[in-house]
Length: 376
Image 1: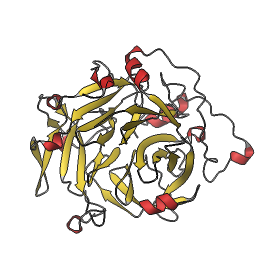
Image 2: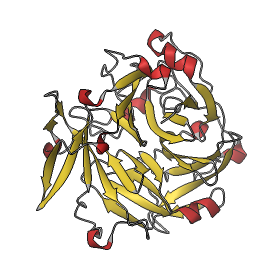
Image 3: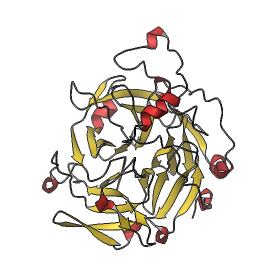
């Protein structure tokens, strides 16, 4: 492979520790909040009951990181990118996307206490925050979901969580004013947890994080891969109409029924983000604050005939496995990796460990987006 740093295969890096990365039925978020370091007091002019405080782009004040020999290769290869916005306002970063025509990085964040989730915009050239917007389902109803993923298609921005991927108009995102509201224009219900999303070559992908009883998936997603190892998670792909950049008319979204996908990738547990390149599929895999995450690289299996199929209703959907047969290569990366996005020979990696909720309890907290040079 052309990326030398990707040649190290790390075993035992998938140790499961207390996860802080996904909304859990066991109430992990509340527990994590109780363990978090006290937040720094805000100046009166920065406080706002309406929006949780004026959103800033500041270093998180990380006090300590433990020695982590297994991530040495990553640290030597990675470059420090922009500071993640809204860390000092207790927002938790989740997804990362890229608007190519503006050279803008998008970051999705969720907040506690019923506050609207956020979409922040960073200039990739300068590293400075351009603006931040609150997300709303309609004019009066804030979107308070996990905002686990964000991606950009031809004319839309997509935010994923809670089995759905929500649609924003790209033009509205680009023209929105700082601290304004962005309202979803529609949504697609998927047959996944919708923990993350990515877009590539006309296909909108929506995937799920699976990890034990706290993060269950549908039993129909349990499939034995070609190594005879059970996978429990799917990433589903939807072909978008090239004219409308939405689902084709024959696949009209219905609020109570998941849309049948065109493709399915059967994936391992604990995946937080994905990037589909021409020749590669990359996975960000993480399951805790004190275990190394993994950046896993597979060859692009979509160039192969389907490995099997899944029957959904009356339709048969092709399935591909991301397993050892796809020549996977893995790099150990810092704990609590989240979304990833690829642009112009650079992979951008987002970590949630710099959030106020986690920075004191994560063993290697990061408050900046990390950059890896990579060719496809």
